[in-house]
Length: 81
Image (tube, rainbow, N blue to C red; front, side):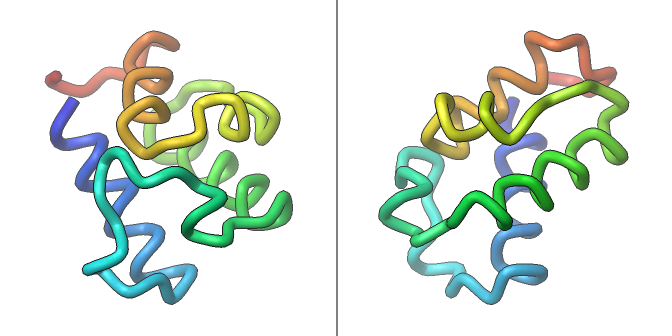
């Protein structure tokens, strides 16, 4: 799961200009000020990277990077936990 958490953190930092020191596995997306458009973009990125279908509504429910990583793995992403 750590590799998925790290990937999501890197995406948020590099593509959405969120300072890395604000990003932790348990920081919720609302605190990071991620709006629905960002969640849609993140869902598309995760779908392409891991080959799993995740909707922005699922990301909104997950609320954190750690929960999102768990969701990616639950959906059957082919990555080492």
